[in-house]
Image 1 (cartoon, rainbow, N blue to C red):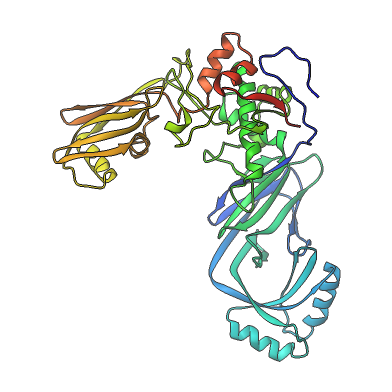
Image 2 (image 1 turned 135 degrees about the vertical axis):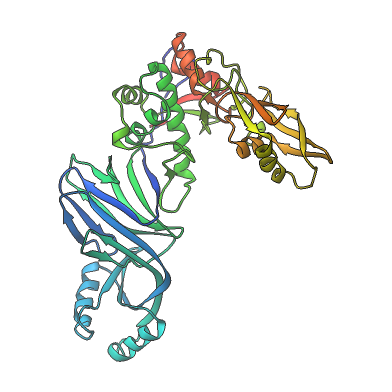
Length: 452
């Protein structure tokens, strides 16, 4: 059903519900803290038991051991209670202090007993205590250790590509904490891709509350903030169907888009989120790849000159009014010796001292897609993106000036240059344009749709 609203872009209604999104808050090297608004509980994922209940923020330590830990698989059960009762019966055969794990997988519960440093010790345990159990077998697991506070120590067993270690449970209306930052929704510790990672699972709109003000100042014109909201929502929707990790859908840093949790929220950006609830930009019925960046330098770029492949709705367009950005135009001076040291490894052949640079292929905006380094012994092709990365330039829209003793990069814009320009959106909003018109301008041919 279509809504009869007079807007620049047509709106349609989708019957789908608001999804949840799993956000990876970053890998944990060794130490982190967990907490809650008040009292919180740590629930062990493998057994569903409360490992501890705490009142204040608590330090945790994790360790990914180099050596495997060996346990004895006993059997599978239809309920965790059956597995636990059988474990208690068997533990009377073992030395005091022997541990057990109940692992839930695909509706059944696997019981494993003991933690042994070698496979031979695990086999000896079977011979000594479990000779009457035909299914008893040795299983190996990564040597993981999780310590919570001073006393609670877990030795989780890795199963599958992403293993949940524990979850933080809080009272209704309160918030869980990770490294002193508050988060809506649920916090869970996972082991995935040989790393520990904390994952925040929460409703999609609540996720945006921690994203939008982290990507654009919340006090900018409300129509600009709304356009950023639609871009961020659309960008993240695609990750649910193509997650970046087995444990989560999307990361929380600039590798995806920045997410700061509850402490990053602002009233103005929350208002923009509420007033555009569920709105995404689509092309041919699917959410677009709604990439965005800070400042265009006056003109955005076609996607094929930055990301290699052309995309119909990611075409370069004029973006006036961005001059107030501190990096609308910029300069970077590099001493000649440093320039040579950085640039020479960018070419595969020895072309001697680099004495000049000429762009050989420009995008529609003037950004350098490819160029040629001219040396005392020859020339070599180098992409603009490679030069930008090597010298930490603000964009690929640059010229190079060789002077006595140094090299100057003269450039425009800040970011990759494709899609929505944040300073451009601000300028359009200040000139009276609505967020629908801003989205229409920067994502050519895209339509606004109420996704949920």
